Length: 58
Length: 497
Image (cartoon, rainbow over all chains, first blue to last red; front, side, top):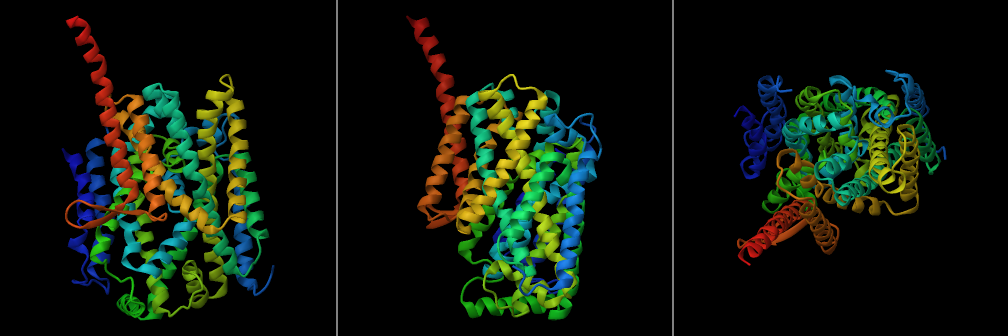
């Protein structure tokens, strides 16, 4: 079940209308940009959580 | 040939180029195998690349030199829409994490080198094997040509004109790939990736301070798009579905290509791949920030002859010439790694799934390696001739179709890892319809990647590759159902009689 975490980046990035806005800004970046950039470390983190539970699989 | 060449930039460029050329030839002795005359060694580096080598190699060949030029160029030209590369290169990794270790395991256990091998093993179909292999080779050729375009931009930015430098660089590349195989790009990838990291980090740290910070850069880009009357730093409503579907379709296609699969097959194990799925997003972060160079072009008020010049012009304008030379070398060397791996991937396909099957079934492992070496050479010469003799747009159009084509191999390659339901006939039918239908749609839309469909709520443009994949899967399912029912019906009829 923990593998389902891998679906979160798809959901988070496919809901384009949600993040296609300027506000709120962060360090001068409109939301559109920092939201998508934030998914990079977030995806790595989610993958790491899944990895910890499956690494003994083979 | 040598007009307006800055000597400092040129010296740095040349020194780095000579360094990687030396590395390319020395690579045949790196992690030395008993023999290089075997496709597992020449074409997959012995399947022993651990986490770090795989990280540099896949990072080096997935984030290509052309990306470094073209993504900022697209963002410079159209704005937010060009950022689809960011969600694309994020969601690709959960997919890699879930699917690629399974594929690696099958390949390792049965000694497979290519996608064609995997498909033949799963379905026992020579037809499907040939379909997958031919698609791989055809999709890769224009991709190699694109790397040449990236290299051309960097060489031109140095002030070198004419085709001689490009031909020389490519010749050198062809020679050391021939002698060292996958070990050459794997070793060069270390240098290439570190250089690209230095260049991009310098750019994103120093350029904003010269241009008044990120806030000012976004404001300048916003104003430039408003003045131009097209593009913008947010997506227009009509761009939302194209943005999402291009990201999704590209992510599904990315690891169907021979060069990315070669990186996967060459790794030392499933956990190596899983760890890379966690670590490779570091390159995505880099790509996202690199894309912003497009906006920095607006903030710096560059006047460009071609959008592709935005990255080179920024470096020439804002950095000392020796660092500009370093950046151009990074881009040119950045083209060598993917071009080498792509030609190796295509050569592996040709050797294993065409030569060995249809020409010389008794070929020895040494013979396989020899055929692959010669093929890799021919593939590169072909790409070079294509760039020298044909208009650049031709390569770009073919590359676009290539993405659509390679996506049609996904059902054949991936479904069989999980399901034992589809027959090879059904998958072959799906592949043929997806490929032909998708190409026809793209052609009728003037070779644009988007096709408008109307599902009742007005026309919506969507990535043609995804439409073709949907068609592909629907056809495969229908044909499979028909084929499965046909024998049952016959049995029932015979029983009734």
